[in-house]
Length: 278
Image 1 (tube, rainbow, N blue to C red):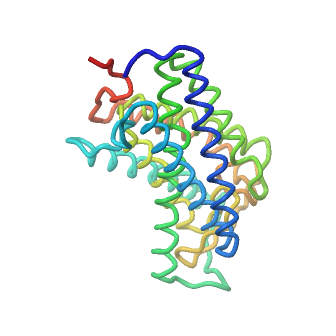
Image 2: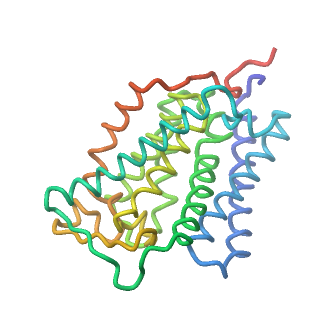
């Protein structure tokens, strides 16, 4: 891609943001009947898809594959490492407390296991993970990363990522801080792999595994296995009604997950967005 000046950068990012916001509001209104979980996931996915597709087409004459969604050699490996890392981390912040007596698991008195519910929640989580990664680490993020560098891009986008979750049910300062860390971490995952498959995998694996033992996910209660997690520890560790993402265990597990993914044999490629036009 050709060099972009400050005015061009502002124009591209501005159109991306405006398109995303307008689409988000429109789809949220259209899906008001569908329930908050489906409404949130599908609105984010639609807004991210439209914003990326439009700006890529207008400014780069390119497509979604140019921002790291092309299926290449190593894509499956990166996705798999991401899903595995996210799942193991989520099970660590829920399973370990049960093993050491900080929490216990019981059957949900209102909901039993339902394969259809598990499938439904899984599909919603896939759309949610892909949508959020496209929105926060897609075209605008990669353009800023190329122009401004990692530090000047990762931190502000991390704040935006946290702010986007600040109105979730039972959100608090700890959930904001951990979500900020997640936003920065997922951006680093993109830098590690050069594609969006690794951060999408981590994002989905974490969100999918977190409710397996009955934990809330970012303030949402998702019934997947018919289990309920009962904490004996206070909200500093459990995250309270928001879920473990507002707890100290999440803060502690992120550096471990980062170290593991840094050591893992991730297939790294140079993103198309970073390549100079010949």
